[in-house]
Amino acid sequence: MEKKLNDLFKEIILFDPEEQGLDLNLFKAGFLDSFGYIELINTLEEEFEIEISLEVIESGELNSYNKFLKYIKNESM
View 1 (spheres, rainbow, N blue to C red):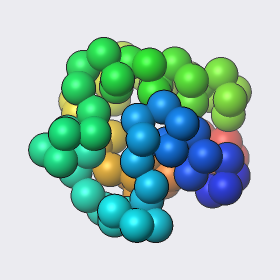
View 2: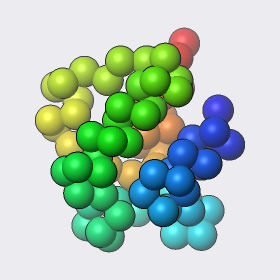
View 3: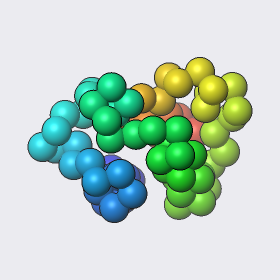
């Protein structure tokens, strides 16, 4: 799961979590904007067969690699 997530982050937002930090705020660092966020969300939902609620999306709580990873792990159980 983590390898797949790493690859998607590298492909979609050009972010390497191992080099740039697992807890880096992707919005503040300039890796994500609103369009990139939606693209990333849509891709993750398809790839991991999960649904990320509108409430979670709008809250902005998914703002780092680790937060995405934790959310996906919880939803995949």
